Amino acid sequence: MNGFPHFDQFLTVADRDGALAETSSRAEAALSRRGLLGVTLGAVGAIVFGKTSVAEAADLPASDVDILNYALVLEYLQASFYTEAERSGALSGATARAARVVGATERAHVNAFRHLLGSRAVARPTFDFQGVTEQQRPFLKTAVALEDLAVEAYKGQAPKVRSNAVLAAAVGIHSVEARHAAWMRELFGITPAVSAFDPPASRAKINRIVASTHFIVSRPRMKARNKPHFTG
Image 1 (cartoon, rainbow, N blue to C red):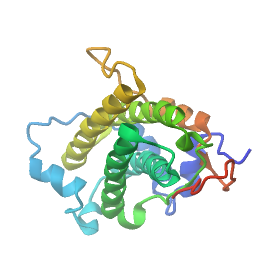
Image 2: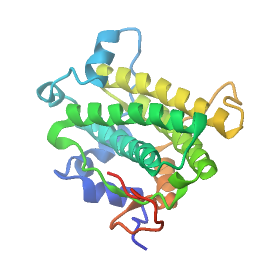
Image 3: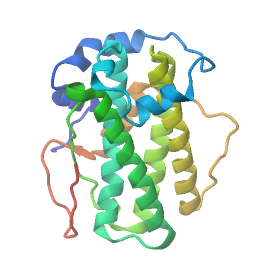
């Protein structure tokens, strides 16, 4: 099997300067919560839309860099998924339009994180989506799963963020991912919102789910004729 059996193994390979390995335990232990009332919208825009320079980002706590890289890998996964679906040309109607809109948003998230992290950003992995981007129903089913996963992941990491600016950015992206999830759920034909409250997901749970998909691979391997089957 070419896939990494554990998502953490991928992060270890992709971590170019050792920042993740050095700080992951501190990131998991950093449980202090930050109130949102003191965070301005300007801070959100600065960090999400690339106005914060790499030099300023160098002052971020190491544990926040770890969390940002964790989020970046999830954004890589989503951006590549939608990009491949667009390029395959297999989607139609409202689903095709949603893939274009959501894909553009996920690529913007990737660009923002990479700009902020600079040389500390983990490398983009190779993905094998195993043909789900080439059929409408499998695409929608997977899109629902990935968007729900992103919402749970951001919620799970938010209390561990030490920087108010990073926290504001995470909350801002979390709300966008929630809208994506509702949109994909509606297109798939299931209720967009079922519960009044949604629990967060731990990093360990997210890692297990992502690893179980085998979407992240160490070496490309084609499984369908349509191109491009691999993105990133």
